[in-house]
Length: 288
Image (cartoon, rainbow, N blue to C red; front, side, top):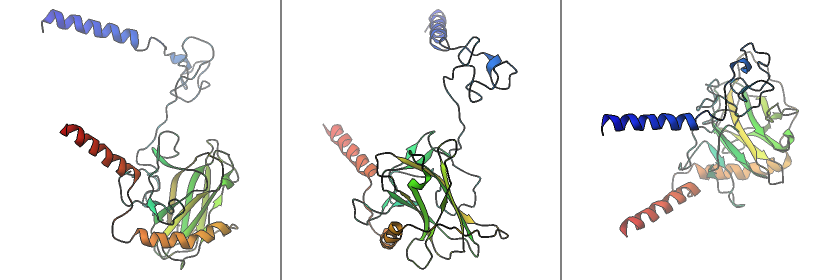
């Protein structure tokens, strides 16, 4: 390529970029939050205000948020395997979150549905639950310490009572079944916190999260924590108990969990089936 040709291509690229990049919006520093302009901080989130150009009121064209792809790293002593769902893999045969029933049969499977994006509360992933669904998060118990447990859910109805959360023994009923207390109302983002402080537990503990709504909406679940309480923390007894429906289901879930941890072939996942089908089609196409 000659030098003149290279210069011509470079000039064309610059012209195309000038035409396509930034011609539809102008950055007005006087309207960015904290810049001292008359509209500073009133146009939306910092980093998204004042992108409407010119004077007058700012119109938000995009918002910017920051997320840690590892989830809530502040809870470094979380005893749940993956409280933020960040380490979820669609191809894993076992995972820290389990769907306890499949088509009405109590055959637990690795959680295979996951949401990815800014709609989640912490990190980049969260669990979407449909009507009358349950997931179980597997945790170890702290040694000689009471237990703090919490999780966040976002029911579309805005009613925190549309989700029930409890701690149960993962594999048997020698540990008490206790209920987490829901917030009276969701926060500004529509998220409800469920929290509880409980007596020490000695065996593997599962956090059961169940949706109670019967419509077709999706409830997001995220940022679950089970950890040892500080030594000087006083236990505030919860005035809530597990519903009769959840208590009825617990023995069946525990029987399924015992089967889930048994060595051997696990049920195929939808993602695994889709990958094998794709590989088969690709192989057939290569052979043609």
